[in-house]
Image (cartoon, rainbow, N blue to C red):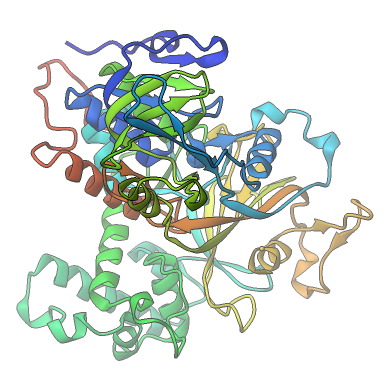
Length: 551
């Protein structure tokens, strides 16, 4: 029998009145409703354990949410300032063997720049759903789709295909990515010899993956070489190499850098795997001829769907509920529970903590040594760097005949010093992320250069004046930039233990790396359990293994 979907009132408590949460002890407490947190919440609930899922925000999704322009601006500015906490240690209300360790919220965003060039055109603020963690898509054959189907959250989601992919340059010229046999032969920018070389290469990759002929498979030595070297060995010209590396394999870093760290060099084995993912994603679903899809109403629908699945299994969700402190054992330094802004203390075996929270370790207050060691581990958030994101609302589509598509600017395509690829995702009104006749580009020096290559950017002194940078190719009519947000976001590592945290959204186009960390954390805490184990289906069940995909 199909489980009924709970009403919103049953699935979530909004803590305006600070009602007591019952029970007060859980197997797991999760703070933050980002995508990985929501997946773990749903999986642990599915396994029969008790879960309390908290979020200080009035909406689901945290750093993976989709918000209106005004709400996005407020969220970015609020999370670009540190929220201090008291640095003294207090006794717990319920146990004199527990110490209260206050939490602060550190800024995970910086360099926030928000401009509204045409406020009269953006009166329908609530009709926009702008992705904080974009640009992102889902490949039809990747791990995220398999997880969505296995967990059955596909019942709560609807998708639409991304119409096409393009490679862009500094002049704003967009060339269609030749990612299939038909696209290769239709491409008018490739010479016949280049088309034959590309077809031969794709055939070799397919034969290697299918292992149909041992004599044409790629050798182990070649698989361990840099992918760029293998493409050169295959006599592919530089233009085609860039298409394969950055628009199909979706590599981020310039593979021609002489001093590129070893960990950033794409090996042939990994490159072939990415090509196979791209190829098997094409036309996997009936209403999507291309490899990529995008959820209706924005990426923020993904964590919401997993939260709904968790609620079906008994998880309690509480929004608008900040967590003020951790409860730690005075003698052992082990985690015991949390103190909420309502003053209530809730206890659990394990805790998943939003990566923006930092325990306040004050050596002046002389905490016990075990507690000091535990807190020092928690304060090591592992900041790896930053990713710069941009969101643009424009007056019209970059391509009048297409609604939603991806643009990739390979390294060195905007200027010679460009060492990373820039990806721009145009999402239109048919995906319910903006009102009709308004398109959203997600796409800072790099982003601004890409924006100027694609759009008419008004000057702040005179919104009717557009910056064209004397670009001769801008004779054609281009969309006008109406609103933009540029911001830098920290990249952090995940942490595993009794208290765990997930990394912030990375700079990849898909969710695969984040899901790998999610699965790793679940299995560490639940070593003898499967992530969303298979269940028997009723004989009359339909579409359990299909996505709701609108053509």
